[in-house]
Each structure stands twice: as structure tokens, then as C-alpha cells.
Length: 245
Image (cartoon, rainbow, N blue to C red; front, top):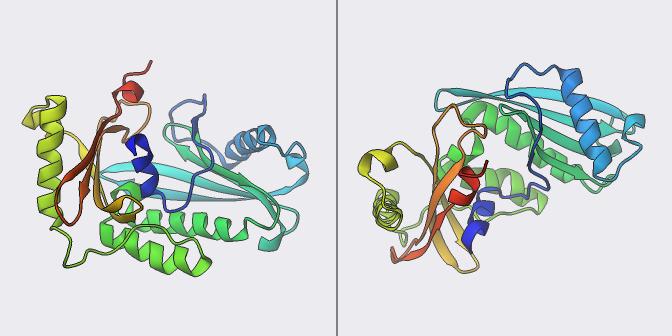
């Protein structure tokens, strides 16, 4: 399961995530974002992207006292959703393409999901830090009706309490990766509760809260806990990613 566990926090799949060599400032204009998205989608296999009409909407997202800006750029043959050819989501900081999708018409539901997630993020903050209840609600209200049901779910009587599971995860990560109380307390924690093919799980991802980092809220460690027994299913370090040059 290793690093695949993070995909559990995206109930739909982000088809592309890569750093874009732009500055890490948030002062991108709509026209700059459209141009960046056009270039990326052209590389993704739509060389005629310039012939389609771009529609752009920006979102301001507040999370743990920090502001993230996201732009949804949809390219269409005409003004109707049925004419959609491709989309891209651009995020600043750090200035990166967060996700893209191509494929005429068949992606209409995916566009709807991406737009709904951005609307929810503008209200609740970045998806990573939603409560397990909000993640389950998004799954049931947005994904399931479109046939995209994810694994996020509400807590049940069979699950150990979230606080107990978090304490198990915290202690295990501290011991395995030799962290002090002050070191582990400096991280922000992303929480998920889900049905996974390997079992019912609590998943806790410890993320950096360092505003000097190029990638905001970068992954540091993660713990996967059996939600019914409290047994540790996996402990993960992302050191090779956050120590990369």
C-alpha cells in the first residue's frame, strides 16, 4: 500500500500533478493561467487547444491561516458544458498545474466533480484538512450520484474513536522515525476514514506547516490504522520527497 495511501484522500483521481517552473507568488492573472494551462494540455495531446474557447473561474481558499488560490480553466467548443474538451486546475502558491483531463464530452461529470470540490474548498479549506464527516458527505452528495463513489465514509460504532486512533498513529510514527514531541507536534494532520480493499482504515497524514516550503503542506509521514482493531497496518515516510533538491 505504501505511498498509494494518499490517493485515498482524492475520491476522484488527479490525472496529473507536477511542479510548474513559475514563481511561487499568487499574483497570476487569468490570462497567464490560461496560457500555462493551454501549454500543458497541448503537451497532453490536444495540439489544437488554441482553437477552443477557455472559461476560467478563480477560487480563494483559506486553510490554517494560509491562502491558496486555484483557477479552474475549462476549454469548450461552445458555451455549453456538453462542448467541453478539456480542463486544467492551476494552484498558487507554488504555481503549479494541480490536475488536468482531456477527452471530449465523456468528462462532463468529471468537470462537475472538480468544480464542486473547488466550491467546497472555498468554503471549508483545502480538501486534505476536511473533517472525515465532510469528506464522507462530499462522497455521498457529489460523487455517488455521478457514479464516482469513493471510499470515504462516516464513523460507525465498530470504529475506534478518532482521538484514540490518532494517538496510536502519533506514538507509532514517533517511535519508528525517532521524532520528539515538539517535532511531531509541528505537523498538521490530515485525517481519513475509509473502506479500503485491504480493510476499514483510519489514515493520518502528517504534513509540514512550514510557509517557506516550495510545496505547501507537503507530506512528511503517514500512518494507516485498522479502524476496528487499532492495529497498525502501515507506517510511511516521505523523506525521499521532501528532502529532494
